[in-house]
Structure formats: C-alpha cells, structure tokens
Image 1 (tube, rainbow, N blue to C red):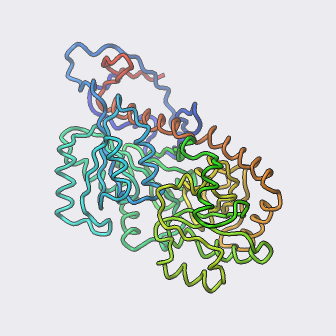
Image 2 (cartoon, rainbow, N blue to C red):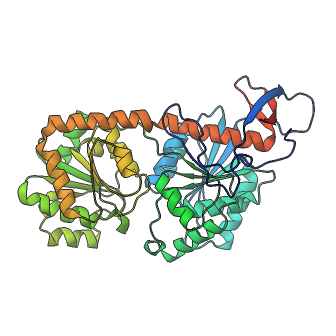
Image 3 (cartoon, one colour):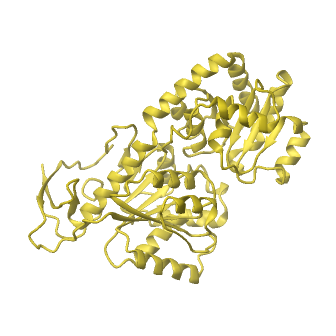
Length: 456
C-alpha cells in the first residue's frame, strides 16, 4: 500500500489495544515487539522522489523540538544534555524549550550551539501568557518532531503540536517509576492522570525501564511504548586516580579513607534518611569511614538533613556538597556508590558510577538489580541494616577486590548502556517517524525516496 497521506508512526505494527513493548539495549539493538495481537510483516522499497507527486521532501536536517520542565541539574535533564551532545547535527537540528527557567544546563546546551528558550512557566501552573509564548515559539520553529520530557513536558508537547503549521510526530519520555500517586505532589499527580487519559495521542511513549512501563500501564497509559535505557559517557565518567586524590584533598580526608557516596537531589523517594541510618550502623564497626552526598538541596542549609546528621552523631563523617559541576570527578573519588531509593526509574548516577569503575549498592526497586547485574550488591529498600551489611562485604574484600568488581561494572555499562548506542536508537526512531509521516525517507546519499509498504 502506498502511503500518500500522513500516518502516525508505527500505527500498523502497534495497534492501540495491543500490549506492545519494545526494549532497545546494546550497540546493535533493534526494535523488537513483544506480545503483538496482529503481527504484520512489513517490507520497504525505495524509489527516488523526483516525480512531483506532492510528498514533503526532507532534504534538510530534521528539526527536533525538545520540551522539558526545566534545565536544573537532574537525571532527566542530564540525559537530555547527553543526548544533545551526541546528536548528529548533519541529520538533526535540535531546539530546546524549558517550561520554567534557563537553569544551569541551559548554558551548557547553549555552548553546544543549540538554541534554548525559557518560557518562565511554573510547572505547577500552566498560565495563559507562558502558554501563548510556547505556542508562538512552536509555530516559529516549525519542528518535524516534538519530544516531550517528563510529565509536564509531555503535555506541553501535545499542546505545542496544535500550533505547528504542518503534521508533526510527538514523542513522550517518561523518566521515572510510579509506585503510588500518593508520593507525588497534588499538581504532579493531576498531570500524570491527564497523561494517562491522553496517552494514545503521542506517536510513541519512551520509558527508561520496563518496570516503569508496567506501573504506568496499571494507571491507564496504553500508548505505543518503547524502552530505551539511559546512556552513559564512558569517556567523561571513567576511573581516575587523579580525581580520587584531588577530591579527597579538597575534602581534607586521607587518601586511603573508605568513601561511600550517594549522589542525587534531595527528595523523599531518594531516601537519604535510610542512607544515613545505615551509615551510622556502619560507623560502629568502621569508625574511619566517611560519607559523601551531593545533589540539589543536599547541603548544610537543608534543615532536615542537618538535623538527622547531628542526631546520629555523624557531623565529622559526612560531607554535603550540594550541586556540583564536576560530578565525574566526585564519583571517581568514591570507593562505593549507593542508591538507597525507595522508588526509582533508571538512575543516571548508578550508571555513571559503574562507568567510573565503582561497585554499587542499590535497593531492589525498578530495574536496578538488572542494571548492576553481578557487579555490586542489591538490598531491600528502607533497610539501613542491609545497607550497612552490603558496605561491610565490599569493605572486607579490600581495594583490589573492589577494583575487580568495578571493572566488571564498567564493562557492563560499555556493553549495554553506552551513550553512543542510545543516541543512535533515538535518532533511528526519529528518522523513521518523520519519514513515515512525510512519506519520504532520507538516505545517506542525500536523495529523497518515496516509501512503499507491502504486507507479507
């Protein structure tokens, strides 16, 4: 059948009532459908588009508009930045809209030569003037594809679609697990519910963990879904004796101090409390160990953290660093990285720690056990004693044992979660969606082709 009119990407192979999930991992990943109710064999043949048949010709880079809540330093925001840093600029012309402010990452994205626009919109309040600015900006950019990031960004992407003067594919990106709406702010919970209601609208919904797909389907997200794991820059995040010595000198600790780290913003689901209580237990047997915590609002101005550290008698053993621009160096300085989260999606900080050659201790939530494999320790969530025991095991194996375990962690990241392979997966999806919508494919020779589909 010849596609002469716009068609939503993947509509023929992922009917809305199917339970289709595609999981993309590894450097040679390809799209794999699971559980299709009506599988279709689709072949593609191409003929040069020079016959004036009226199809849109995509001979320029594909314009991709990314819409995200804000550009403060966080896991989702960093994944967007990393993806942009590896985007093939000969094929794609990206632009970023932050619903809120410019943020710390806005400057870094701008230095990549990518336009960044801040709408000045608080995510908790979609007000008329910022919405008007968003509509006008989307109309001016004329994207071929809009990529939403996180719940508010996803809804904003659907809103922006209405003001683009041509047909456009819209992708959503869900970046977290969802164990209970009770754990979310009331405004965020309402946005999540709205997303469930509208979840058949986007071309494709991207998730970064299979657990997240299951949890969102349970509350009504039934759109065409793909799992693409987070990707990691194994050059930026790498073992470094230089970073190890520099950061320890900055902290004023001996070079052989056993450093346990938790990097991540302050949020109830990150469960800093369990981490600290586990630390207090560990210090009873290993009083010279020290703990490094970094992330947004993770500093001595945080009354909750400060009070708990004081109550546990850990002031001399804890370093609260706040947000850091040198996260690769801070991570490489640790002996063990930890995620004490009670809920998670696919935490960037654990993949980055593995890339730095660190063994990790993680809680048994989301896809974390699969992410670390045999290269670390998995413990129950909200269990300080289990954390302390896992740290004890890693301490007792000595530095050489930890280096061997960390080497296995880095090899796993390189094999399954390299940033280059993840960026290629995004780009392939984008190219396919735009090509199907336009009825045109761009090949490496720069010529345009009609797409003809035949059912087998």
